[in-house]
Length: 335
Image (cartoon, rainbow, N blue to C red; front, side, top):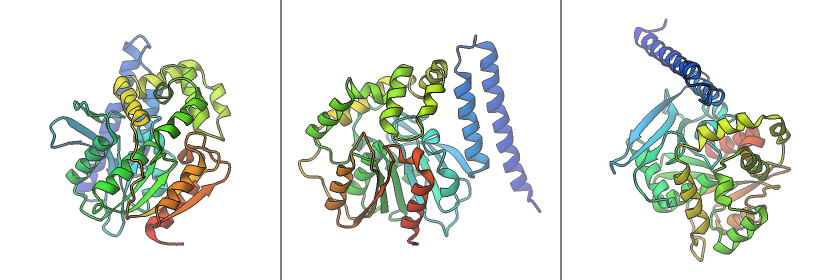
């Protein structure tokens, strides 16, 4: 028998969903069709999927600095017998779009904490700092506001999120028990960055923050080894809508984040971390070549490397089931 409290909770959730859908439809009807309705509706249905099928709920956290607001998706019913897993995304949209293929399975094994990094999605700051340290400090501040204690977290991170996770593991080692790094160029030297940038031509920060369908297609082509032919069939106006929703609001801030990452000189020696670490890499990664994953594994004695055949940089998109199984097995300690 459903309690009155549970009934009210469910009713409020569905009313919120209905209001969101109605809001988007109103915009479509009265904004002369300039409003990116298709992507907005898709984004709304993703929220529905997170809410109903993954038992996740959105929450906004104001940090103590008085300047920064972080948006999270967190498990609606946290269970004490489940580990806490933080999921840190990369470039390429907000956390919903990047983790859509993973949250259903992972939500069955973990209490999830999925933030939009600052200037992605609904997270924002008035702070002018664009460093990895600022992102790391913001995520830690948000997690502490959500009641995450010391040593009770595992972190799964992809690409740009890997830089943030690695920095957290170094500065706040007491917070993280285990770390999963997927396709992330942690420790790249300035020379290595320049070498990889030349392969793709142009300004890499503009590729990471596309302003037109051509750049978006290039970003996908560089990031994936399989399943990219479908993009040839997607009309430019839909890609333009995706760009408007994902990048336009904080475009300059996202470009500045990318430039800070690409232009800064990493430490002469890649600093070590103590946490048990799982490194996952696609052998066809055209962004951060596999050799860098091997180098990272050699540098971290308490780590293991899993190489996925015929997979590119976007492991979370190309091989989500395999990646989920690796994460679950590693964090839960089961074969």
